[in-house]
Image 1 (spheres, rainbow, N blue to C red):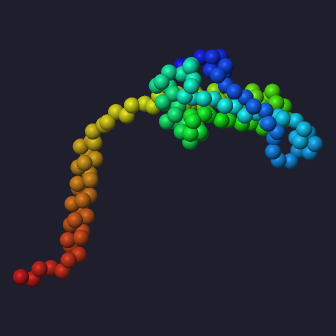
Image 2 (cartoon, one colour):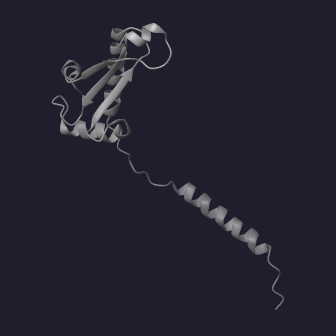
Image 3 (cartoon, one colour):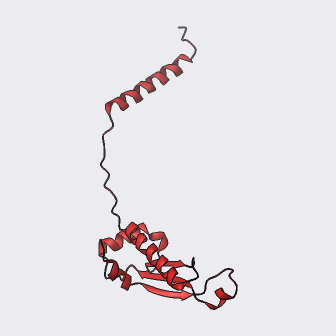
Length: 135
């Protein structure tokens, strides 16, 4: 599929301060981690893989085809980095799954026959509602 170690070398990280409540600790420690991965400039992924990721993860990519993930679940910067890397690898694996080709099937004769019988029955029911022709 792809080389995990090589793709991890292409990642860029940025540590920022977490938002929200948390007292003094959150105001002086940059524990939130942001991960950046440039899909377009990746050397590890082939063109087909890049196209597949762009189509599957298009709502998560920026206009420049950069995937941004962030994590501020833990108070530890290292733990947040581990979590965001794990999420990234799962996302990439999901994005690279090749969809199964649909095999077109023929409608069974029994289904066609049943539909036509129902149509005829319905037609007769509606025809019986009309007033009889006296001529």
